[in-house]
Picture: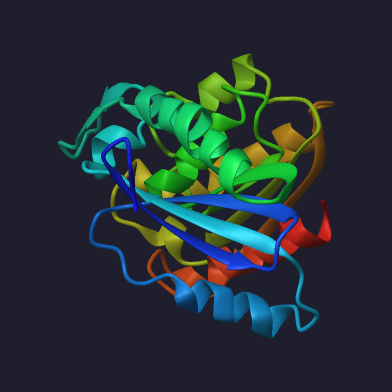
Length: 223
């Protein structure tokens, strides 16, 4: 279906469970493998919904503010509009058309994972997120999280590939240190109810579906 100009797909496992909102690009692969990985990791089926929505411009729609990097990348900072879509269109749609338990989580990979975590600092609609191989190296993001607080009671799943810090890019190679700092910061944050940081084998593009499924399973286990 199309909501506010965005292509959306809804995958349901039963009814009455939590909802995971996954932000993707316009040319992403089908997302059924994520659900299959969840079934493999959690043989006891539990009700939940995966709501997948797309963006037209990856670097614009998931970046929290305008920024330029030393390697020439430019980000337009359109996350506010994406968050508005999430909270004012996607969540109300789910509430109207699906039976849920009222717990909504963001899920993302790479820059959309940065957005998934950033959203917790912008709204109290969300119960937590899975930030998988997130772009925590994004300019000024770590400073932002030091000066702001997430919504109260959130659960946060942090995940990174073990080789991701081996990047030749001087900014991206800091991602491992950023994750360690983020883990420590959130575990000391009274508003964060539960936090975990998992390291996975491989680089940035390894087993993305499986890594996101692990985030879903952890959040299902820690509702």
